[in-house]
Image 1 (cartoon, helix red, strand yellow):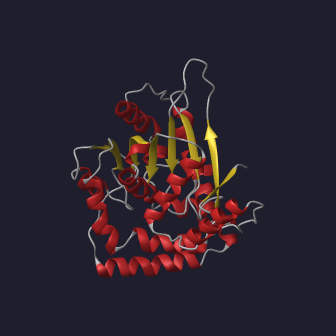
Image 2 (cartoon, one colour):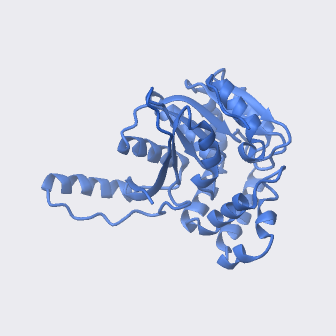
Length: 303
């Protein structure tokens, strides 16, 4: 499996490509949400492969990416040693703030020598992408945010969510994945329509294998008073054209939160997919792809 060192941490990544003799395709980068991995973006990437070279990667601490820095190897060159020492010092400052994940993406693009890309991001990954759009606008052509939005701070609700989230992250026995139908129960809150069993099982496995510190840390940083104040400002100052797609029955990030976020900027186009919840790109792939194609003004093969 391909790995790349990004800011001292081994990140898993993969390309979904189809050869083209007539033109050099633009790149679309896919970013997954909390406790997930790049795996659930593969079907969407496969549907867009005629128009894009698709880059999928696992966020730091999730999927197949490490949660903590690798050991920095000694260098034969004094100049390189200094560079590595400086990098090692920076690594020690890595946190689970969403802004840090945006910087991870910038470093990944630099490592892969990608100058300007399209970005398709989901849930927590969409918050990372919105931050990235404003920190690195020169690197982005257009963005698609799926199941994203802004929310108001509620101290009691946030405290309860953090407490519950802590329990969920702490008690994740590996044998849970072997219980019949547990994948269906696990995904019930996230879906309105059914998705294939293999997809449900992959979600459960990603959740069980997520790094403890990353899973817990991002719960506190993504659902916080700070984020409730920051994200409206981030949407308001967008300069990158964005499509924000919501699921009608999403319980995790309700569609009204997406509509409120879109209202902050004339750069954001809002679209809601009926009869879907937190994974509209899987629950109704044909409608999702049609909306993406219209936004990007490209032909998309829809089954």
